Image (cartoon, rainbow over all chains, first blue to last red; front, side, top):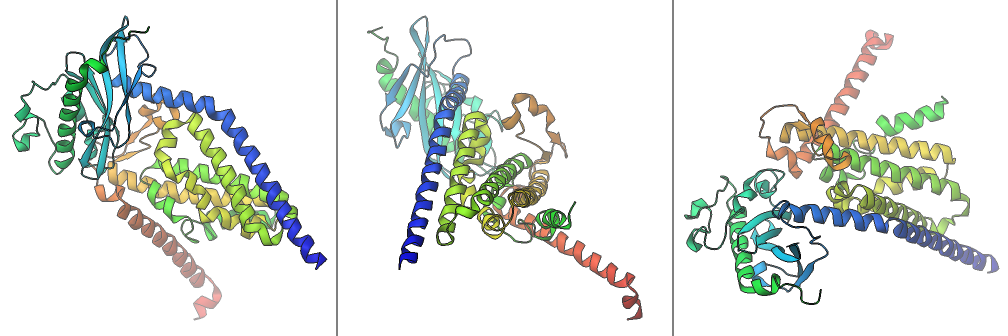
Length: 210
Length: 225
C-alpha cells in the first residue's frame, strides 16, 4: 500500500514539476519575444497599407490613426474591422478600409482598399484568400498586376452598370477559367466604395480634439 | 565512428527514413511540400524541435515515472514547439505566415513523439540527439526532394519564395529551371503530393531491388544457381 502511494505521489510530483518548468519556459519566451512580434506585425501591416495609398502623399502613421469599422454588409465584414486614415499636414487625404468579398470561389477574399478623399481608388491589396493556386490567385499582387486595374477607378468611372468583368459586359479584365474570383472582387470593391460614399464625413473627419 | 553511431546515421537517413519508410508525419509532409523553401523550412524546424526534445528527454529520463511518460513527453514537445513558434513569429514573420498551422502542428507530428519514446527515453543523451537530428534530416531530405519535384513541375522554378526568409535581395536567387513555363497545376495541388511521394518511395524500392539482384548475381552461390 505504502509503495503504491509513494509511486502515485512521485508521478504526481513529476507532472507538477515538469508543468511548472514548461510554464516558466513559455512565459519567459513569450515576454522576451513580444516586442519583436508586435514590431514585425506592425511593419508587415504598415507595408501593406502603404501599398494601397498614394506613395509619398501622406506624412502620418496610418496604423496609429485607426478608426473602428462596424460589422457591415457593404464591406463584407463578419467581425468589426479597422480603417486607417492617411493624413498630410494633419488633414485626412485618404482612408484604407478593411473589407472582404464573401463570394469568392473558395470562401471569403479579404482585402484592403485605399480610397482618396475624392472617392477614387488609390489601391487594392488582397490580404487573405483560399482561391485555387495558379488559377484564381492572380488577384495577389505577387502573382499578377490584375489588382492594379482598380487604381484610379471610382463609383462614376466606370458607370455603375459597367462595374463588372468584361464577360458580363463590364470594364474589368478577367482570366479565362477563373471568372468567379474577379467577379467577387469587382463587386466587393464597388460595395466598399459605396460604403465610403455613405460614410465619407465620418471617415475623413478632421480630428477636433488634437 | 563507432558502429552504433554509424547505424544511427544510416537508420535516420535511409534504412528507417521517417518520410518514405516509417511513413510518419505525412500530413505536414504532403501539405507543405509544394516548393523547396517551404519544405526546407518546415523540415529544419521539425529537426530542431526533435533534437531539443530528444536531448531534454534523454537528460531527464531518470526522473520520468513510467506511468506518466507519454503526457510528460507531449508536455516537453509542446513547450519546445511553442518556443520555436514564438521565435519564428518574432524574427521571420513571412515564413511564419507561410508555415501557418503546420508549425504548431509539429507537436502532433508522430515522428517527434516516436523518437522520444522509442529512442531518447532509453539511450544516452548524445546518441538521442544524434538520432533525432538524423531522423529529422531524413524527413527534411524527403520534404526537399518532394518540394523540388513539385515546384519544377508545378511552377518551373526552384527556390521561389526564398525572399521570405532572407529578405528581398534573395529574389534574385530564384532559379527558373524551365523559362516561361506556366506550370502543371496538378503538381502543386494535394494530389501532386501523393503522386510525388509514391514515385519517391517507388524509386527507393527500385534501388534496393537492383542492389539485391546485383548482390545475388555477384555472389558465388548466385552463379551456381
